[in-house]
Image (cartoon, rainbow, N blue to C red; front, side, top):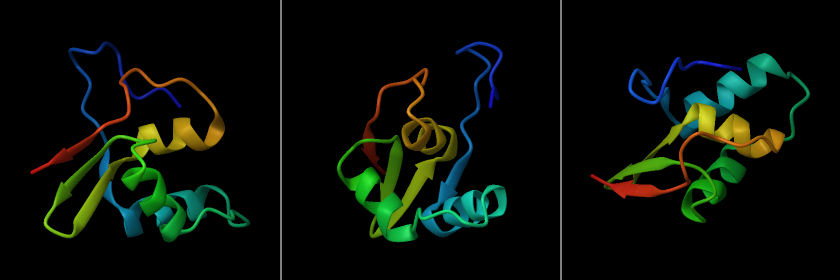
Amino acid sequence: METETSNNDFVPRIRTISQAADMILAADPDTAISEYAIRKLANKIKIRSLVSGSKIMVDYDSLVACISGQPYSFPPEQIQI
């Protein structure tokens, strides 16, 4: 799943945890990945995410790379906004 042409042109697909879970479910109806699992990955800084108050938003491509065992162009981090 290639969504970038170079790091300079890259626009991350930031989604809420619920939206990210829905996107994974649409791609794989039998998935075992839950909203809880995505939240844990974000809080353990295994994927790129943004936190605003109690709302966590994740970089969808980082999530997909993490669960598929593929490398991602940017390191995992959690940014407080």
